Length: 387
Picture: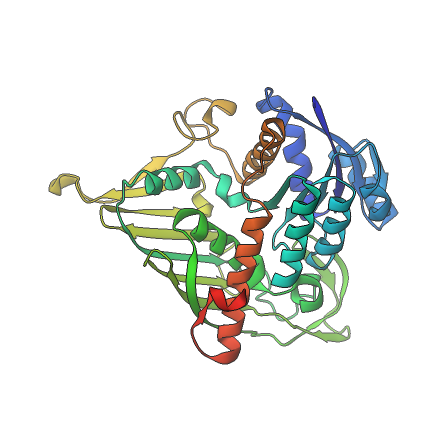
């Protein structure tokens, strides 16, 4: 298949990120299967047409049900709000379409499993949007762990900190409503850290957590776009039904210990997605606000030069370095999506499942729900209890 004809549902924050990735792929990865930006889909015809023209899609469709059954579409890209994921993904699978779906995969574990079962029954390729895996520095971290260069893993500590809703007058956007988003910082930010932990360390065994909603009510919005919104502080107010912050401890199946924190109430932290892994032979540290760098420490360094070293992961032999710029020229957030879509296009050409896929989405959802259960019941919860 020379071209993959894409129908994308959603056109705001993630829609823009995905569109940019599809447009960049042929220029920077010319040997991979080419995505054809065939149809963009959304409910607001005016906003949709503006996005179609700006992002470079060939045509627009306001009814996703029509889109998923079209014969001229091979892949359905879902970046609509979380409450729409399940219905669209199952319909797409039943129509024989490959599926890319943003995280979290669904509102709950049961829905995620239904999505996975539908995709497997249909025999289609499926991928979930954990884009941070595809930063070259994270790929280097994976290699160091997999090659045993930091030894037996003892600790994983990760946190994703933001501050965009600290103002109590910030409007009640859909991400703060459980019936649409599924959860707050836990499912939105924590899901990324959970996936990173699974990717780098392995499966979770048990968890215990706590959470808090600091601002209980907010003014209703008059407009929403991505992570921004408009509203009047004197407008009617609605209830915040998700967590503002969730923290939990974990034990991994391999014996390692973990701590994970996700919050939108950390002033000064715009997008601090960070982890540290400690092993018997060394440690590694990553912070997405310094996306091109990995800090590395090895215990067998000479005593007089021991300490963390800063590795710039954009040059050869690091992942994806052949596609981008000369030595020392950095890359950023948008490149993680290009690498993500590169993996999907490559998997389609090689007739294999891309990674991460719906299996990873289900496993992440199981950890999210185990944490929720532990908070509700104030106890340690084994991941196996959710199955």
